[in-house]
Length: 301
Image (tube, rainbow, N blue to C red):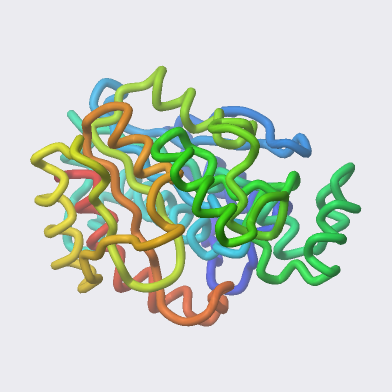
């Protein structure tokens, strides 16, 4: 079994595929597949283990410069593999016992184009490279959107029209590095990839990982499940992250909001780490170690 390094590899497309291939080679019991292809043709993949009838969805990489979230879920996937192969525990919990009647689906990178642009520059946007260069001024370090300049987490059909008005009041009315929600809800391939997955698959709850702030968002509108607050409290106690409410342009349009509205089941956003995005790779081990127990609890609760 090959030891996989996570704390020295920024997960652009090449590295991300290398890590996933290493995981699949080490552990042949994961199901691995393609959800869709991005605007630029990059793969949006999933990894699945356990009971397919009772799954939790963990997803990351919605925003380009928040690539540490992708590493977080890939390392957690690897630790699950170790647990199942060797019988060891994760954070003192034997997750294999729970996977008899629970399942996990992990989507490590919802927005692979945005991640690539943030890490490797505007030329990674392929036919949209001129657009990205123009609206970013050539500096894509803080790029959040997809290759078309649409912020995926403003593109879901939950309060989209209200959010769109707020964007316009803030002079956000065209493609850009962040916060532009597109011409209409689910206008983007990446958004449709995750919404179609949820429409075709039962998830008892769904969690989206972002950075940064060490906060947990769990509320949206009046459609929340009674279990939503309980899950948020358990994860907050484990991680010592604060339960919080979004404000202003962070209200509506997001995956968590859409999941709650669409299915009346718990949806959460977890903002990992603290500092300035993109969080440095040197923060990764401390963030993962702090959240490992919370990741396990998010599956078994």
